[in-house]
Image (tube, rainbow, N blue to C red; front, top):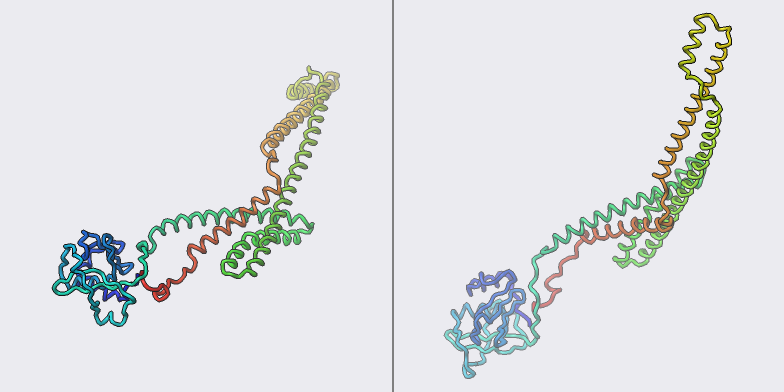
Length: 388
C-alpha cells in the first residue's frame, strides 16, 4: 500500500502535534485505539512502512494522514459506529501534500464529529508486511571477530605448509645438478613454484568473482601448474630422504657386522694370553727393582719383559673390545630413535601438504577480502521505490 512521501521534519511535526513522539518502540511500531471500530490498541502505526492498519476492522491508510487528523480532531471517540453514521467525504490535505495526490482511493468509515473528521485515502495495492529493519551492525561484530580469528589461523597454517613445501622443493630441485651455484638456483625455482601454487587460487577466485572469466581460467591453470610442480618436488624430496635413510641403515648394518667380527677376533686373541699374566703396574715395578739391583742380565728380567708385553697387549685388546661394544650399543639406540615411518606414501603426503598450502591460504585471503574489502554502496531512496 503506497504511503505519502514526507520528509522527516514533516513527520516529526505531525508526531508532536498528535502527542505520539514517545509512543513508538525500538522497531518503530505503536498501537492506538481504532477510531473506526473502537478496538483497544487495535490500530497499528508503523514508521517503517508509513502506514496505519486496524487488526479488527481492517481499516488502513497513510500514517501522516492519521497523525494530522488526530491532531485536528483532538481526542477520539472510541464508541463503535453504526452503518447510518458512515459518510463519504473528501480528504483534507495540507499544502505540502497537495503536490503528491494519491491514486484510486477507498473511503474508510469514520464518525462525523466536531470538527469534522476527514476520511483516509488508501490505494488498492495489497499490504506487504515487512520485518522491522535491524540496527546497522547488530550481530555482525561477533561474527566478524570469529571469522577474522579463523582466517588468521588458516593463513598461518597455510603459510607454514607453504614454507615446508618450499623447503622440500628447494632440497629436491637442488639435487638435480652437481654444481653448487646452479643447485641453489634450481632450488629457488622450487620455492617459486610453491608461491605460485598458494597464491594462484586466490587470484582465480578474485577474477571469477569480478566476472573476468578469461583471467580466472588463466590464473587457475597457473595455480595448477605451480601445485603440480610443488607436489612433484615434495614427493621427490621424500623419496630421496627415504632412500638416504635406507642407505644409512644398510651402511650401519654393514658396520655393525664388521664391528662384531672384530670383537670376536679380539676376544680370541685375548683368550690366547695366559690368565696368570701379571698386571702392567706390577711388572713395571718388578723391572724397576731388578734394574736398580743391576741384575738385568739374568733370565727372570727377560721373562718379566716378555710378560709385560703380553699384559700391555691384553689391556689394548680389552680397551678395543669395550669401545666396540659401546659403539654397538649407541648405534642400536640411535637406530631405534630414528627409525623411519612407512605409514604414508610420499605422493599422498605431498598432495595433502599442497592442499594445506594452497587452499588454506586461499580461504583465508578470500575471507579477509569479504570481511574488510570494499562495501557495496547503499541504494538510494529513488531506487527502492515507494514505502509499502
